[in-house]
Amino acid sequence: MLGWLLTGPCGMRVAVVGADDGPARDAVVGVGVPEDRALREEQLRAAKELVERFPTNDDAVYLLGLVYETQGDVDAAMACWEQALALDPTRADAHRSLGYAHELREELEPAETHFRKAVALAPQEPEYRIRLAHALMLNGDAAGVLETLAAVSPPLPMAERLRGQACQQLERFEDARRHYETALKLDPDFAEACYGLAQVCARLGEVETATAYRQRFAALKSESQTRGRRQRSAFDAVQIARASAAQTLADVGRVYLARQQPGEAERRWQRAAALDPANVPARFNRMMLLQQSGRNAEAVVLCRELIGIEPENGIHQLGLGNLLLRLDRVADAEEAFRAVVRLAPERPEGCFALAQLLSRRADGLAEAERMAERAVALMPAAPHFFVLGRIQLRNGRLAAARANLDRACAMEPGNAEFARWRASVMQPTGEAPSKP
Image (cartoon, rainbow, N blue to C red; front, side, top):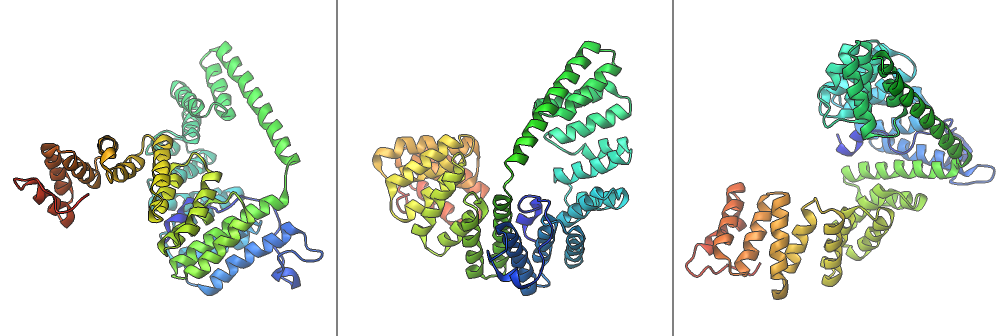
């Protein structure tokens, strides 16, 4: 099973009818065929072709189910998810999808069964526990809700709201208030948490507080309704169809790549990017493919597109820096790595990359050591200790270098390169076998 499919439905959920088969199915946009319908046909055709190519691949079958769900054919979607489970009974996401489909039909018993199986298969996935807890709440099993959500950590708004509901039903009003307050702290616009607090405070005799929460609930609901009207007035069926089709094509490409067909994957990713200028997965995966095949200049173009879409995402700057290094554009690479440090100061990757780059020149060794020390502090991993030790050796700090190379070797005793460098600093001269 591919991990990327475990996160759930691709694209947006759109309330549209399923695409019809017929003469127009091969058209992207044809005479008399609205663009949104043509896009839905293209989306469904891409998923069907994938299953035709790989009929026993559970990822392909599951993805086709997601497309049917997006296009409103829930029966066909559920049939695909059942087929995916027949091919791979360990698919927690298929159980989740089936559970949600049953829940929407108010078939609570099968919904609960599927959610329980999803939790059993992926006990650390909070979404599955929240789904199960919601089904249990609908069934009136408040104690089951609390038991199911006990393992959800750190706290999440919906989990805390469900805990509050369960405690309220069990007449544990102080506990209910605590959970509702946590939900509201995590999400200040959570109207349902305000409503729960209004009810609980009223039961506790706190009339003024209850009134304040009731007023806040009313204000939040009014704001939500206003946003909903604005969204409906700005609804663009073509734009939504483009984004949904692009996401499906991005996922189809991943299946092709997993089946060792990179050319087919790249074609789907190119089409997805053309459909949706904001689609990240298609661009990111094609960039990785280009990088692996040595097409670094093309990959740089995609990486810059990703930075334009997600300017605060440091991973794109890190990728750009690595690509620029391959193209021997060292100054530009340094700029990219410094951007990673600025955008993600809590992550070690930028410091680590910058330390290695700065250690290439004599005037950068002091800062290189500081960056390497910071990477070690953020994540005490063997490669970080190793690079820090090598830089300290260049800086003439032999004792510190020995200590950090010792740590690297202790963490990865089978690493020949680590052992070779450690042996070099044990020599009386402290000479290394080669430059870092």
